[in-house]
Length: 62
Image (cartoon, rainbow, N blue to C red; front, side, top):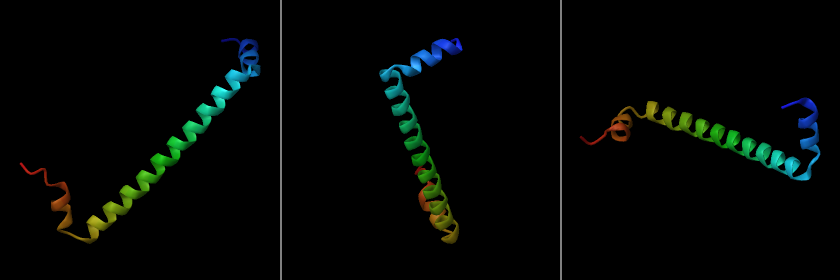
């Protein structure tokens, strides 16, 4: 897409709204991923502290 066309599209209200929605959704996803990553670390730390819990959580029950 040429630079001029891209600038013209950005001037349209619907395009601006969609870009704003996309940016907002992207930030929410990033925050959610970071939150779950931190939670996973906390759970892994607890498993490491409690030696036998690792076997209870990860046992596939074959």
